[in-house]
Image 1 (tube, one colour):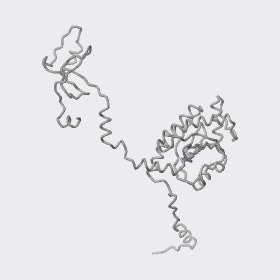
Image 2 (cartoon, rainbow, N blue to C red):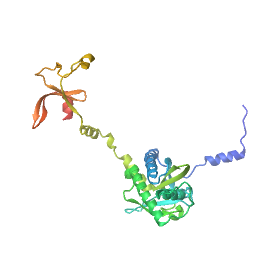
Image 3 (cartoon, rainbow, N blue to C red):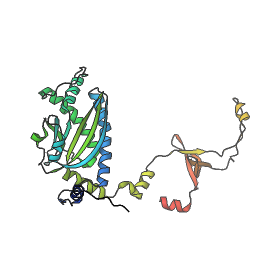
Image 4 (cartoon, one colour):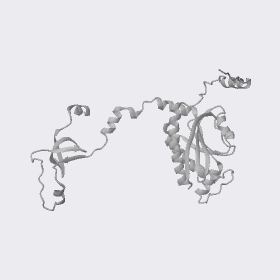
Length: 309
């Protein structure tokens, strides 16, 4: 068998590739699969709500899709964000947690033009927002943050509110450079353009709440809760006579004054049914000015009766 010699440069490259990497136990390498799945589902639901909000408020055809969710340091996040962009800072009055909603500055200016009744078809040049424009963007972001809070539920602090608008992520310095943030990246197709938007949330608080919610027993798995929910669900009860089979010709020939004899004996109680299932027998009575029925026997099995009690 003929052997193929390996060049020294190839051996050196393979050795460098196989070299072990230092693992930082203070910073997980990535989100766990369960956390990624939970966050991706929440952010995906938020993306649909955000697109509908932009379509309604900014009068722009919008399609927003989640690209990925990752765990990064703030410095790594800043390196991926354009040097000039729209950074809406959200802060929590009860803690030091701060979040960022980031999207292109020309898109923000285009939304403002649309909200003020303009055409907005031409892409404006990036510039700082005026005080009135910032107020319009903050109002739009208030509703955006509301949709984000609905999608993430208890993972997002209820006191988180929209604050200042910045244009450079490095100067904004929301958290420390080596602090971890959970970053959700979205692709935004606005009319005929495709942009990128991001949301950065403090990782420590978010992952702690995510772990607590994952370790807590799920209410949907509680048999008692399911049973109580079923017991509180309203159902329609029907009091009926015993049915009689007739031919279609008899039904088609019916006229006013015709008498149809029934198979139900006069002394026999009526059937009390839920949907098509007979659950009891009852006799006709009255309750004040209304008709009523008096249950005379129950057709439930003894085991089911004991269970329901």
